[in-house]
Length: 88
Image (cartoon, rainbow, N blue to C red; front, side, top):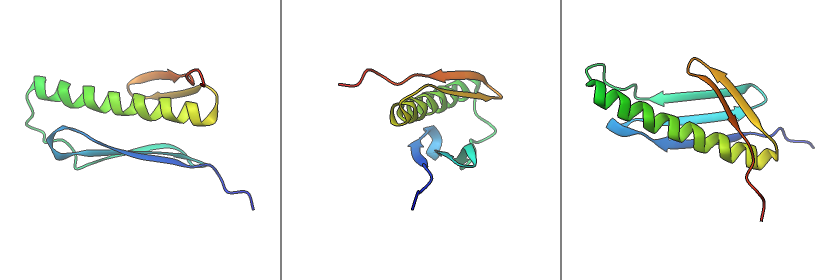
């Protein structure tokens, strides 16, 4: 039996939030729970966004290494390309 490839990882974000990334036959998805509080200062919003982007980058780097090839994601924040690192 051939099982479809699926990759899921969760990351902690500031303010008690978690983001879970999921890649599989249905495509790429992410869920942030709970949503960040709406009353964050601009500095706090930037801190949250930076943590989210670092988590997304880590997930995509991991995914490209597992697949053995580049991964490209296009979303509301632009295009992110990840290439597998050199294998040891």
